[in-house]
Length: 163
Image 1 (cartoon, helix red, strand yellow):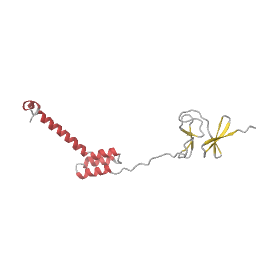
Image 2 (cartoon, rainbow, N blue to C red):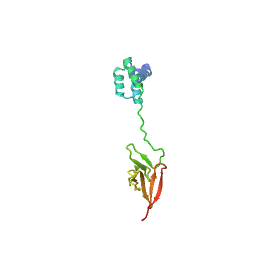
Image 3 (cartoon, rainbow, N blue to C red):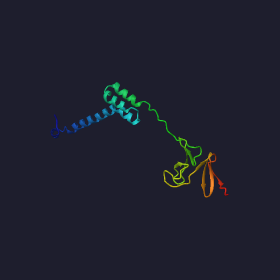
Image 4 (tube, one colour):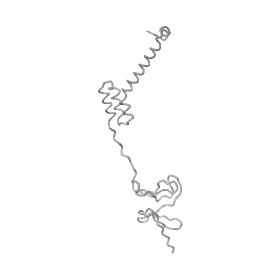
């Protein structure tokens, strides 16, 4: 059996190292091909990756088990429906949440806040609350009462009647 000590006499060290590296290279390639279905399943985020792993590890040595694991890894993945929030046709100071509550844009941080809130939950700054009277939202600012026109998306000013 040749050793490194004997290799210095006969010059056999380089072929022995080359044989060892060739064996390691071949082992890495064989393991890569053997676990290919599992790698594909993990990268594609296939449901039940565990099933692919079990079949690949325990039955992959048979050609049939390896092909089944590969087929499971390559199956089509159902796409999850994207949840896109509904926005009004004109993106201004209002938005309707799924529960039907009316929201407005904070004048300071531009995040959504309830129309009747006087403090923004995001930036904690004060703003004039809106009040609901009938079917309109009203706001009192600078001595004038204004209502939010949903169709034009603008404030309409009404002076306060002084008696």
